[in-house]
Length: 610
Image 1 (cartoon, rainbow, N blue to C red):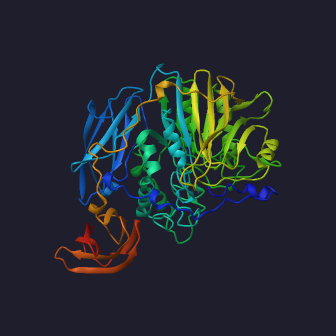
Image 2 (tube, rainbow, N blue to C red):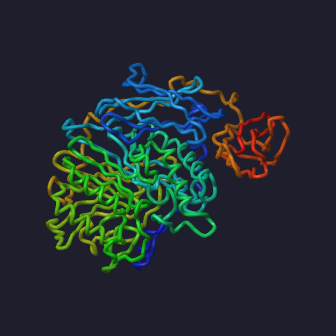
Image 3 (tube, rainbow, N blue to C red):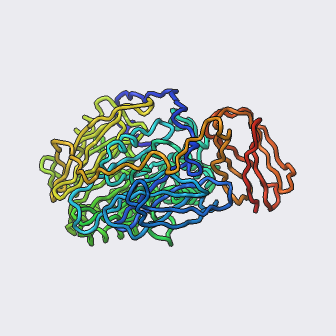
């Protein structure tokens, strides 16, 4: 959410602005030719006791691709426990997703894909436990990874730890803005705000080429939900603050965002008959049930409208009923809700400051609290992102006592951002806590993450911050630790960081594909086609390609007889990712070739016009 930040209207402090920089190290973001045709790496997610999703994307000139996958218990991929074939094409943007079945609970596996005699990176994943087989769990919790604001050092720091079962990403995995609209440390592809299915696919593709994000996905399974920026800022069911006149129909745009998200993310559709549903449940034995919610697109009513309506909802009735029923039926010790926006109240001088949060949906918040207490739902812990700052909160009901924690419905751990800017307000933390006694800790300035450590006795969040998102390297520091004890429903300070169990430390997946042979620089093609959207085409095509060197380029379209139908000079294109939109509405139905021409060669893609 870009506009928290109505908080600024309520505070009479001068704000220290985020220090912008023109720092850009292009060496950090070059296409790795050694990964062809799996330039985007691999990913896994949605772990169950006996299954997990594995994902990749294949870049090919063919109209479809028959990709082989396999899963093993060793990094050398010798002890294969599952394998198969899957076909992908332009209909799914050449992404590959497999729900691997028949695996063992709480076991580390390695996986890879192959196509046309080439192998992908090997990935590492881990299934969930079942029954009473586990006493301790650890997760890294992140949100708000805005490419334009800097480097994803947080992801590297999490991978370096090698001590978590999975990564939980609470939304704003991508951002929809164009170049310079919200951050200008790194350039984007496409450079304009994303509106169409092709735009959203291209932005996901661009993110997945980031080496730090690629490394995170390679080494850990991830559990995700979207927030607003995967579609548009301050989205709700029927619209968004950043969906404006001239940007088309909102429901079309939302559909494009959801389609591309399911294509490019390693998640399992919880309901094949409901393409918009993302809320779902993960059971980690009898220790923890994790409920991943959608407080953004599924049932949310518009912000700032009828806020006192007793039927006002941020979840929607279907999702609310699903959640409360699942919580009542759960036999797990900890009921953990992964969701987007802050649940605990945030008031300045008695006035809520952000109606985009649960403060704007208080009737449903009170209803949820009362349900938890009236039905003896134990140990509710809420995981939250969105706000670019970190918080540790009790969830106060009427009669809340800040000294004893009495009449708290549960606790909330809010993670700060991977890159997006916070609110470095002088004395802001002290003021907020003095006016909101259920807020036990807040950090308004730093980026970072927290480690959620869950055992039989307590659930603890260890907060970590990083030093910079604009420098090539950075440091990581422990910031704070808070816990809730079994049965307490409120926070207490933790005296030490939670130690990792040795069972979490497993061998990393190797850095290189199994058939790794580095391509000499002099043997690289100047240009690599990454994507062409859509294909088959109707009115426009969107090209995404990569230059391994600075080169003069022209673009041509030919029919099958070789007759040139289109020509344009692209000028001198510098090394890096490029995109180009071409209007093909005047072409008749048939097969054509798109050609990028340089002084050294021709680079072709076949397209079909409907």
